[in-house]
Structure formats: C-alpha cells, structure tokens
Image (cartoon, rainbow, N blue to C red; front, side, top):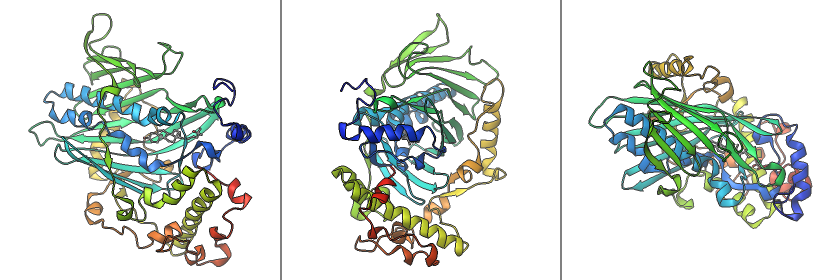
Length: 457
Ligand code: HC3
C-alpha cells in the first residue's frame, strides 16, 4: 500500500491497532504518558535522553563565548538555537522513518554523559524531577569555556485534528563574554508542536508559533515558525529577527534570518530588500559531537539505559509480551514506592536539581528577563513558561547537591525498579507497606492480555 494512503506506512499486521490508536487519541486527557500506542511505534529511547539534543553541536554552543561584541554574541546564540531544532525535532523521524513514542521516564531517572572534543568537556545531567506531571530537568556545562545551559520542560497535549503539544518550562543560558567575569543570561522559551502525518502512520513533528530569546544584555530574538503550505510553502519554515530593547523592533531588526530550520537558512544584516547577506547556513554541515555515556555495567541503576535495558532489548526483538512485562515491573515498583513515601511522609530525593522560589535572590535576574519578555514590544504576553503548578515547581541545577552526588545515587534504586541485585524481579510488596494496596507482582502475569493491553510507550 503506498505510504500516502490512510495507514499506508503502517505494517499490514498493525493497521487495526493503528486505527484504534487514532480513535483513542481523539479523546485522551492531555497527559501524553497515558497514550497507549501500538507496538510498531514504540521507541526504546526515554524522553530523559532528549536533553542531549540541545548541544550535540558543541562548536555552535561554545561560539558565543569567543565573541567580544554583544550583538554578535546574541546572534550566535540565535544561530546555535536554530541549529538545535533539527536534532530536537526531526532527527528521529529522519533516522527511523517516523516519530516513535518515547518511553515515559520514571521519577529519578537519570541520563548522564559528556561530549569530549576540541572544545574540552561538555557535561550533561538530565533527571526526571517529576512524574505527575512528567517533567525533565537538564543542565549542560562546559567549564573550560564557562558556559551553561539549564532548563526543564513538561508537555501538555490536546487534540484537534491532530495532537497539539504545549511545552511548559524554559531554558536559561549563562555565559561570560571573552576575558570578562561578567555573567550574561539568555532566557529561551519553548515553542509549541504538533504532530503531522498521523493518519498515514508515519508521524513527524512540526513546530508552531513562536520562540523567544531575551538577554540580560538587552538583545531580543523572536523566531516565527510556519509549517508546510504557509508563507514559503516549504516545511519547517521560519523567519527570525534580532533587535536591541529600545533601539529597534521585530519589524525593524538589526539582523533578520529566514529559511528552513531543518535544511538551510540565511542570516542578513538589517531587514527588507536592502539587507546584506551575512551567511547562509546548513545545519547538516555542522559536525555533531558524540555523547559519551558510561558502559551499562558502570551505570547507576537509575541511569536510563541501564534501567530500561531489558525493555529496550524486548522492543528490539519485537517481543511485546516481554516488553510489557519489564515495563510493568518498573511502573508497578514506582507506584508502590510512591505509596510508601506517602505513608512515611517523605519525598523522593532529586539528585541534581532543586525547586526554587521566585523570591530567591538568585532568581532576580530571571525575574527581570521574564518581565522583559512579557513587555508588549516583545509580544510574549501569554507566555506559560513558568507555571509551577504544571511542572511541580521551578527547577534549577543545584551545584551543592551535584558536588555531593555519588553512585549509588539512591538507597532505594533497585526497589524503585522492582529489581533484585541479580536483575530478577523483586516482589513489589516489599516496597509497599500496605499490602491491600500492593500492586500485583508483575512477574505473575508477564504474558496476560490485560498487561499487553496496558502497554504504553
Ligand atoms: C511530543 C513528543 C514528546 C516530547 C518531545 C519534546 C517536546 C521533549 C523535549 C525536547 O527538548 C523536545 C521534544 C521533541 C519531540 C517531542 C516528542 C515528539 C513526539 C512525542 C510524543 C509523546 C509521541 C506521540 C506518539 C506518536 C505515536 C504520535 O508519535
């Protein structure tokens, strides 16, 4: 069947389940983790890994730290961000043929690694800081070049013709200009997305609306996204402008950039017909650095690849009974642990991140940037990037905690996964003190149709 007909990209044996999936998403409740997807669309990559997409282009990430001129620095930040979009939003569908359903990280799941290249070491820490609602926090630091990106994000989905996803949260980039101890901060907003091509069974992501970058140096970037069939008629189109607060505007910018973020774009000085081309740029020309992560046997039990190892193997084999069994083992152990924490009136300890209060003196700069972004001249008056009720707080990397963090990161690590030392299943009731509420041990029904039906990506 050609891919362009309804369900055409779906394997013949899965067409029925794809149709049921399409019917089910029309009425789902906004929590992406509750979507039950057919087996062929499940990915073995957890969402906690997605944080790495921000800086695989290390050369562009580091570039602003080498630039003495603040306007050029702000332009380099914009260029880096535009460049991350291909990795963040279409690398998976390019590689796998469609956007798969990632694994829902469990609370405390970690993804740790570092890029080692000519720019020194850039370290990545990504931690699932909330499960309901799901929120991932990350911090990426290059000490040699004194630059750090940190942020957190959750997603809120809705259905109207397709799946629409609002990203809740934000990113903060801090850096030092060359030979200076001054710190400058860039607040980056996260654009909304929608899923295209669902009906044909080969979904891909498109970015919508707007993304802003506001800086403590007064520079403002606005990126307007337009999908296929709008403005230029080309997919992943955008137009961006950069101006200085009080000295220009969105329509009278210092620099304007246009093109397709997944293909090529042109940066011009000024705007309109008289603007001079500064450079034309292709994200695919940029060398991406490979993230180094510890071998599985050296990983902490809560590190993503180690924790989901058996699920990933089962997905790769296409064995859905086994996938369901190992996924349920983690999910049931998590539920039992949450109950135990509730009974003991304690909370799961986050290893690297803490919740901050808006009154915290360290948050003053952030407060100023939020004000700047909400100013009518910038046009982000409806920004939802700080909504502690929707992200279980406002999350920041906690250097003190990080300095003390040692493997094993949690005493309850194996119990949190429902595992014993030898990798076999721990009886889940060991975790729950209230036996009447203890979930069914997952090992009891690894192949039951009920477990299969519950299978979620
Ligand atoms: C919506 C999404 C999960 C969230 C992903 C996020 C927003 C995560 C943070 C990253 O920085 C950027 C990012 C990129 C892609 C987003 C994913 C695309 C698809 C996935 C859905 C949960 C999958 C929906 C299922 C299906 C079968 C339609 O693909």
